[in-house]
Image (cartoon, rainbow, N blue to C red; front, side, top):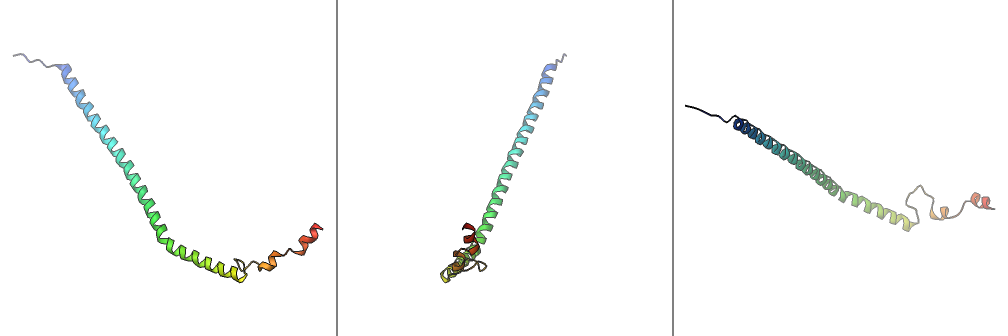
Length: 105
């Protein structure tokens, strides 16, 4: 009885198995990379959404404060006062100080 083994065929089969294993590892690495990239995008979108929700939650109180300030400024304007109580009255600051007139003479 004579048995012949194709030695080259055994090495080629081993190389094919190793090549297929390498392809599987590469595919898994690409899958992991894409999965991580997608998770980063989801986390970023979630952070943007949370920020938008916080802004939306604060908007009513900010709008109320701005409306109150506008009503107060309107009342001051109609009363003849400037926007800030530290400013002089409109009739006082619309006149030129005497020292400015003297410097041009």
